[in-house]
Image 1 (cartoon, one colour):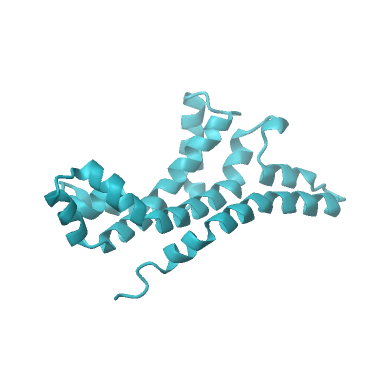
Image 2 (cartoon, rainbow, N blue to C red):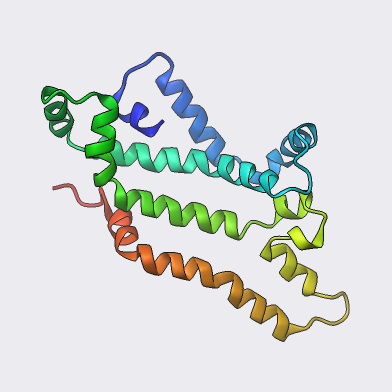
Length: 186
């Protein structure tokens, strides 16, 4: 989708991209009732696919925005040279654009993973079974009204942050490149 926004001209391109930006600026809590009604209609209440579908949908606007900005900075000459050599749009995307976009894809992956991993409101809304709870909901369940077991809460919080730290360590070199891509014009 971002490749199309960056390189192709089609009817309604600016309107659709504007709607994506609009969805990106909406607070998640505004959409909770329509999302819940859709989850009820498609029998996704108390299921892990119900979480995954919403997490993916929530991250699409930001990923599209970031990737479109990156793709617009790629030199057109590089893509035109691929077309002159006989590559179609799919082959150009797969062989040229995708390898160049590893840093920005790592950045989007880290941001989306962090957003889904730390999300509390949607998981607390649709998951009823204690075995299916996400870590933020489970950690909140450790807190009592009168007494909280802080040692258990801190241990669970450490376990919750560990996978994100591991993802960041493995993707750090791409993440650093991705965050500074386009910062210096040269």
